[in-house]
Image 1: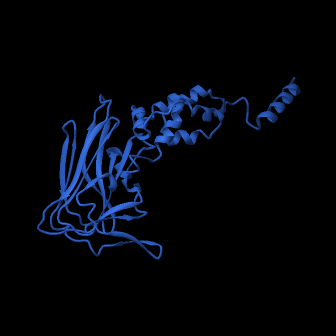
Image 2 (image 1 turned 90 degrees about the horizontal axis):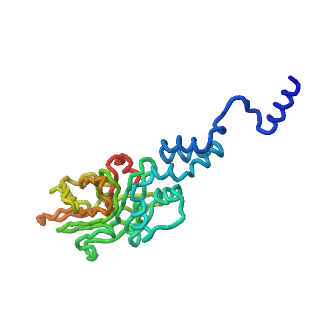
Image 3 (image 1 turned 180 degrees about the vertical axis):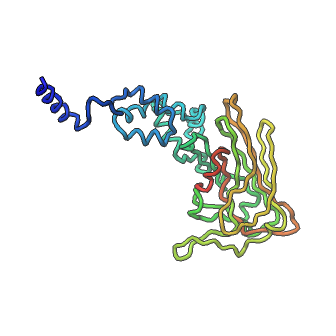
Length: 289
């Protein structure tokens, strides 16, 4: 009998490798149980664990696992970006699409979902903003640069009245969001293949502060002001925060502005790249934009 059991054990080992069949492993877990485990992980961890074995790979495609990672109003977000909702997509495919940087509004806006938190992020290019005097080449110009997600920035050489306005109407999920202007004192360029920043024309920003304002259609408002002093580097200047309530199932309209309209002096040498709307909990990742 002992020799028979030995032959039986050896034949199974040849089929399943050297793993001890009397000790269960991760591969023995039912796929439905694995899916319940994955549901408690963040998207990056789910994709990592999906490579363990077939059970984890199969469970990583379960719709209910990804339903909890998607923004509640992901349908509205997709319709805003694509102009419609694609049918027959699995929830993992939808999350994969939303976690990429997606352009819309003729390429002037980009939106994506943070892979870790599922929070919605939005970026509006300088061409998607209303800039006073932008068509007057004596003052403003669009400069191509690799420093921007949009491949170009608005550069003001010299001006008396500086005003940049913008607005966005978007189905933001519930949460607290921060709005930033991405700016640089200095003109970006390249020299011998290296990125450089020419600060020769920077002037006037250390005399009077710049005013940032933010308002929403439901009455939220914030205002702040500061001097622009850091030349040669891209910086995010905080315009304000707004809150989207859990009961809101439609678009949220926000307006924002940046002004320096003291006409007693000129100012110039400033690049306006974009306005960024970011979940307040993710603002530590702003430097990646």
